Image (cartoon, rainbow, N blue to C red; front, side, top):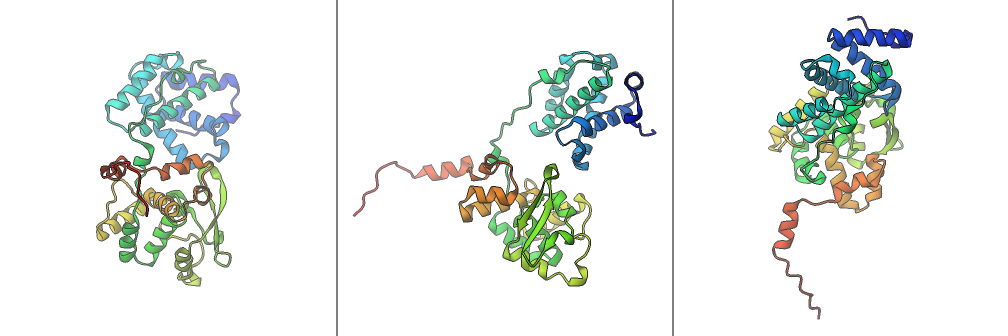
Length: 314
């Protein structure tokens, strides 16, 4: 399919093209429409990351497959039966609430694009509830422990060590790990500049261990990207392999568990919520507070021998 230049179309041409796409079940054109509209009116606007766009494109394709099987005309109506049925079907598939809500957001973006194209005034997704999490937020935050990190570092080569420390000490997300370049690293001031979620740029201070790991990279190799891996899948495979070698659980932690480890361990050591929020670049300490919570198992363990009686002091 030839990519549509939506900016060059008049309102009438835009509407005619989208109506034709709906009738012909032309998914590619409708995905293109949604992505263009997202870049114009979405929360991230033109700074919307490629990762986010891929997620929305995938979500729109899933919703269109469901909707077209039930009649394209329903997409031009305020048909809450269609959107509620879609979300119910996703839950029946056993998808996690977060995935269901991501698919819901993609469908909502599609309807906004259809309204922009002038083929409908409907927004039936607004009347469909978000899926509710059944697990406490802090119990979902799986993090590698101190012992886990020590075991991983013990089997890591120099590049793998650098990867682990960028995640567990600097708190970098997977896209930030892959995108970090040497021109953003200032070894003299022990800082680095990172552009992360929402295209926000921030300065991050280096821990002593991370600083030393960066210094150990030969000067002739300090150009281009800091890490040698360019693909998120490859980075996941590297960490999975390290976990297998070290006898550390990978399944519910994966690469993002390194960032969670950074939060929990720094909070444990400093007991300073604001400091941790700044280091992780959280927009609010309410996000960081998740890491200060404890699991129900730890609560049960703490209360098991607790009597509530006053202590007698001499």
